Length: 357
Image (cartoon, rainbow, N blue to C red; front, side, top):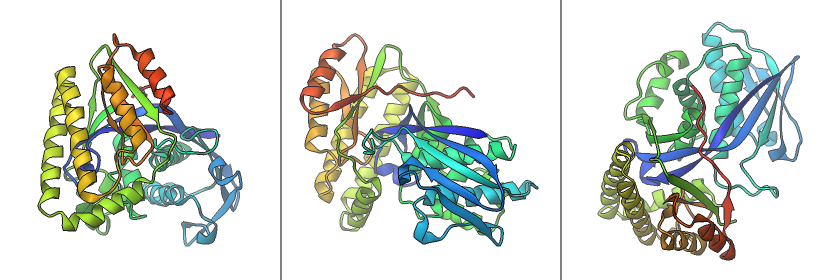
């Protein structure tokens, strides 16, 4: 049996602007995982996941392509990952096989509520890693990212695909999305193998290192949010914000760029100022679009962290889910966490996950 895991992620800065190519964000991979297992099968495969109540979904191939009756398919990211990777595998001269695929997730709580750790990205990455191992093909984080990105583009994802980058590369990363129109145009002209082997315009994925003696804290509001829905709402209102939105994009690019430089200079004061500034930009975006990004609990999470000397903001699309804090380790962190709990915020015992390359 083959097993492959991919970590969840959290956005630290650059949300919403990052869905526009060449606008950076900062993400971090965390030590909660989705694990995909593959076992060879005969004539018909299956997909099995606790996320689907434990019921296996059968699949077969029609004209050499994975086929599931769409009325029975809750696993669109998995099936698209298989289809894209199947093409790459065939282009490498391998014969396609059947297999049973099982998914186990740590990216939600015991009642199935999602923490907002990027489950769709992680399951795509884990599936592709497992498939390449199954077919005994070598891979790099860049290859995994590009195959996973192509899978998400095939389902018209409106996200930045930063979750895929964090799950593929792990650790702290600076990220900006590629030119989607260019990639989609090239996809119609090139094989998958050719497309993943060439540079993609505007794509940036660089490792970052958090300065010493800085702690990364995560609080969960207990209220899951839909990134897709929130991003759609903001995108739908961009047309009526022609004076504001270009300024938001420029300011976000500048601020996140400054945070990235502060990471490289190990300047926590610069990181802290950037996090505070990025929060201000997101609050202004929320006000202009009338899309709630920072909920009351997220505001409480942030204010409590700031009272203890930390820099904090919502993580990802907001609307619930998690908030993040960067704080010096000599601060009274136990008091901060206690006040979170009193306010109804659950501290998550997440750590940064860095895979050995």
